[in-house]
Length: 598
Ligand code: ACM
Image (tube, rainbow, N blue to C red; front, side):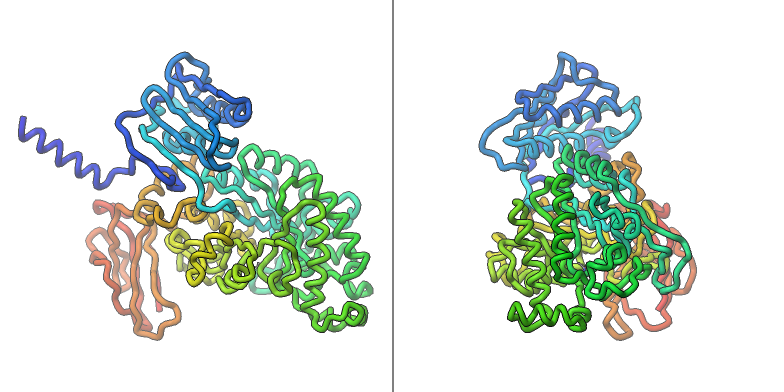
């Protein structure tokens, strides 16, 4: 008997070492107190909604549960109770999971919605299945949770300008965002390479501006394949409504005064040189076409925004403002004369005048203006929010002036960056693996106290210069955007990479149910080294998957279960070194063989 219990103890501790965490919630809640037992959802489970304000999200939850489990949540047994209480923040919720009852308390719909997302995450991931699943025990481990986000702005930028994605793909992204409690879908809708919104008053925007004759990928050589598309007003209404039901705000971005070639190709009179010929751009980069600061342009933009107000109820509107070289403003006699009349000395100030003019219009219509960090240069906008994308210096500048900022520094936030240093990872050169995304925290360290007040959030950006279809978009975005969701929600003191990497298998299970084509880099060895150091230089090997070991070779042979195990210490690599590495778990390969040749 004694020997048996020792054996059991040994067995259970061995299991404990390799077992998945009992609570797999992403993002990590503010507090979670584990408890004994579990709530098992079944044919007798009832959903009780005590306040009509929560009816809509409750019905959507019921639909989700019915789809995968077949249960209608109208039994007379154990209960899921949604209770409205006073005193919690807009996105906060409390939750008590016990064997006979799940109680979710919130003051507002957003908090209650997040409580339901947490409950879904406590259940087996097949709860996200789109077809009925049999033979699963729908158990949620008991616990008490109190939760609220660290930041109210938790965004994802989606660039439909450079590459057109249909509305179903957009909705798929919004659905995953909501699962992980992100709440701002920043929709980049106008670019040099395409205008993507139907505007009734200006039909050429989509007849002409939504189409390019080809795409010149990074070689600069066109592929001869026309590309384009746009969202009709009904498409946009559908997406905005889909997002609303998931507590996601859709923020439209209309770029001014640069990144505007597609609009100018449709209506050359919006440019400084209307007699010139313009085409929707086929190549990436920063282009010199700018909207002219004329009455014609202002009327055009006001008309465009007026049509957008009916489509996007968001209190936030993004007006771009980045990457607008002023060559045409210098060249244009009209612009130079206007500068004289306005008494301004630089073309930068002319952009400030332009942006202020549109910013005032948006404010008059109750909108808060968001812009890229260039909007800080002029400083004329009233109470804007700046997106600091060129590192943290713009954020510091804004904070010191009392301006709210969203952090989106490209080295940590741009999802077109590489996640695996491999020859087939077609992406920006900046190396941004999952762990780097996870370990970021939106703060300006030198302004820690002020950061708490003025940094309202954090956003990842899915730019699409390196993306040519839905699968590629999904593999660039996921799972890194799930790490980003935790960055935006979870307080710094609660973040823990070791915990996060163990929660990933459940995330992958969820993404599988949602049919998301996520990157498998998590299962591959990652080469972590400083690209700027001279040879010989130190190399670290990393494996995000926590249950494996790394084996590698330096003689060009394929690593096997008998190759040397990486001991976790950096080793020197020199020119000519070829490393081949792979993860192994109990002798069996994990992920693929990766090679790095110097
Ligand atoms: C940007 O990356 N130009 C916002």
